[in-house]
Length: 336
Image (tube, rainbow, N blue to C red; front, side):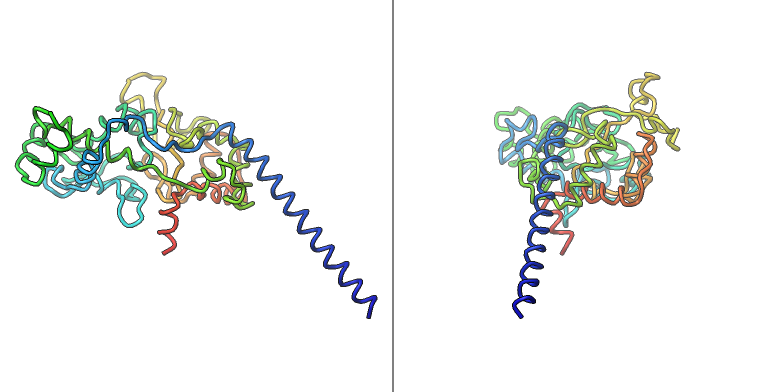
């Protein structure tokens, strides 16, 4: 009896030692990868550039305008139509390209508006420098909201009684409160509040338990595979242009990206590198929304941009890591 008890105790001690060893090894792995990550990534700041002049009244007006279909020619579309923030959506419509107010489809995928103000330029081709300039683009674009002119937008809102006081309060002292300039400034003020909070930032802040071992292995693969060639910084993207099809040509040769703005031959097929924050919720992927699967996007990008062949397990691990970039509230909404 005593011999059996001794063997059982030794067995339990062995399990305990093994468990402690595994935990130590797990912690060492996470700490090591964290140190690598801190060299190339950053936590999202609490405030966006330009927000120092935003007031609660201006933000409230911007939110009202963002959801108002009166900004489109026929009253059928708002900013939220293509950059959906309702019901746990991640600031996109999850369509390859979006239909406009008059029924024509756009030519590029609608990117997320979440964290957009942290990017170095706006739109896939970088044709606008900031959120304010970006906000006016779709309103006047003939394929999108299709308003004929800035003046037409102003007149339309001036004829809506509910906006009279809102603009006066949001822009006190303005000689012409309901102006196109103030409209875009208010929308930008609201969009500057759209900052997300995810588990990856918790990890970067030192919480090793914020990510599982599988997610950390995916992060390590993301770094060592070379994805950080383009996806760096607080947004894991959004801070540079890169050629789509850097090593192996991409199939879409019609959309020449940045080149369509600059006419510079060196800019052919150059696009703004998209942010990967909330990427698990912003499918389909690529500038024309050609790829529905995040895992397949990972495999294709590694092949085209890095000449790296990822196996299924590696792609799945990286995908697991990318899921940690989802805002916590949005992640919770997905589970409901």
